[in-house]
Amino acid sequence: MSWSRRTLLKAVAGASALTAGCGGRTANPTPSGDPTTPPSGATYAYTHQRPDGNRLLAGRGDVVGATPVEVPLEGTPAWLLAFAHESDTYWTVVTERGAATTHRVRGGETRRVGNHGTVAQPPVGYLADDTPAVVTPPQDAAAHTHPHVADQGLVYVAADGDVVLRQGETTTRADMAAPGDARPVALGDGRYVLYGAATDRYRHGALGDAVEGSSLVVVDPSAARVDVAVTLDSPAVFEGLFPLVADVDGDGKREVVTTVATPDDGARIRVYTPDGAELATGPVYGPGWRHQLCAAPFAPDGATELAVVRKPHVDRTLEYYRLTDGRLEIRATREGYASHTYGSRNVDQALGGDLDDDGRTELLVPTADRTSLAVVRRIPGGTAQAGSLPLGARLATNLVGVGVGNGIAVGAGTAEGVRVWTG
Image (cartoon, rainbow, N blue to C red):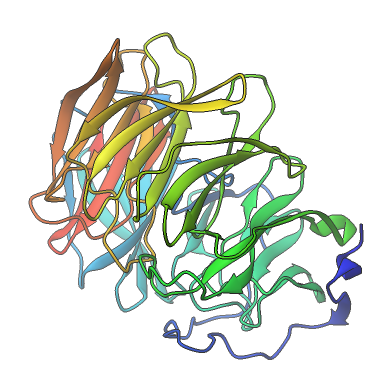
């Protein structure tokens, strides 16, 4: 199926001169610098931890018992990226005003090692050898998304809703009418999945505006091909900025996790195959959002479960889902976690990982008052809190982590600065 199934294919030389932003949205600070040509061999970092949107930290270590290192800043941090090189960790911090700096943590000491000027938000960064940098998006990129680094180029959502592949001086575009804050995530086979067909028919407004996607689109940018387009009937929408891609049922194949919402029923989790077939839909609970966080081997028996916070602004209830035999069932719940602030486009304030070096995967998620990060473990019959990381103030950034040496490091920011735990 070509881009032009119901879209427009345009191969042009050079970058488009469209202005970032769209009606009803506040534009980002203007990024400084030219669009980035991704260097080969670099390590890339996203605010959602992995290119597939699954907020899962590789490696293992004990950060629960660690003393945090304080990274002083000028301004309130909004976004973090994390890298590691040998025994050092690097933390790129973007403030609310878009000023970006990178700080190295070595042996309990911090040092600023990069000043990147004003950058787009949310950011994408990379580390080439031991030199940190931030990807500068093309000028026609939408105001509240970020590019995804593809083979020899960038995949991104433009301000006019097009999905764009930029490779050197050649740009290939497809009209997807994507929301201006939609983010492509990787399926792992060279294709990308994102939300398209922007609509304001569901005016919840929890994620920055009242515009949501009403289609799920799988694109193969290298072949200029739309592989899948699943369109929801009105009044349903996909309430989220991007899907999550993971092997949810343990069959060795990846699935696409979405949140589908309607005005009457609120949000429920729905899982698709990469070819657009619906596998399962979870229960409804009434009006409100469900925040999909991470798919990982959380279960006591090591099976994969999906961690979700139901109504993070009201109920603040953590749910663990299991997909088995075509059924998506809630296996455990725990109250008291606020993984999102109403109206914010920062949906990356939780992550999974082995955080206490016990060989089990836990979830790191803000408590209801957002002044500490809880380490939550699944146990037979329910959940338990295995520890916490105090923040000293309310969480202001996404959560990120990185494997370093034989351990891990995680970071979080507040108005007081950034804290990094290494263990």
